[in-house]
Amino acid sequence: MLTADECRDFSSHYKALAGAGDISPKRLSTLISISKSFAELAKQLELLATIASEEDRKVLPFFRHGGG
Image (cartoon, rainbow, N blue to C red; front, side, top):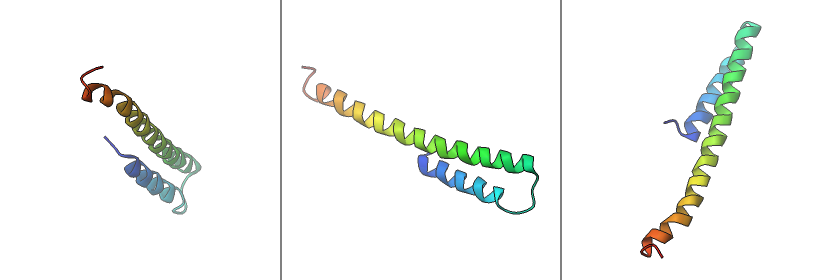
């Protein structure tokens, strides 16, 4: 699975490709869209990690103390 950092790297890469010179509008649009998609995926992966961490903190104490 990709990490948030890897997604940000991919986003930057595709953004750089979009700004790399004489390309068609169709290619430019697609590269920008891919860049934005990777940036959004990075945000979602960070959110998922935060949610999982919060949920684990709620569940793990229950199991550490014998379930009640």
